[in-house]
Length: 104
Image 1 (cartoon, rainbow, N blue to C red):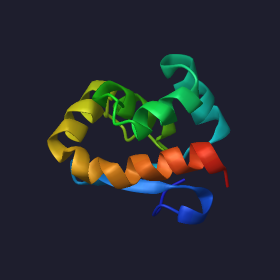
Image 2: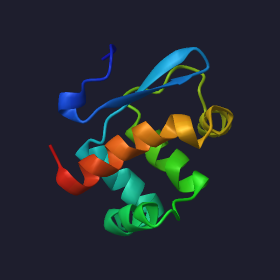
Image 3: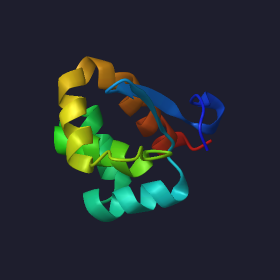
Image 4: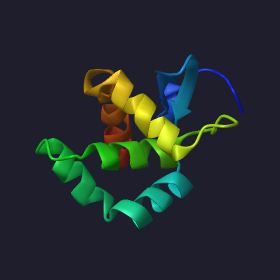
């Protein structure tokens, strides 16, 4: 499954290393993220209070990747997200958090 992000499905995209990565908060992805990060509602609360850590943001994005490009490790994704900066990540995180709270 490739192609551009579909906002109707709750997808968002972020450009990393010349590739457009699409994140989609599917049930399976959110269950995996919750297994690592704890309850998603608490994650959303921390984000709303400005206490979402970079590690949490990277983990959420990793679990919600629609496709993981060949050769991309989680560590590489984390480094690329740091290089992008929080301003570039904000729209993606906002979309993911909105989907967690409101669903489709």
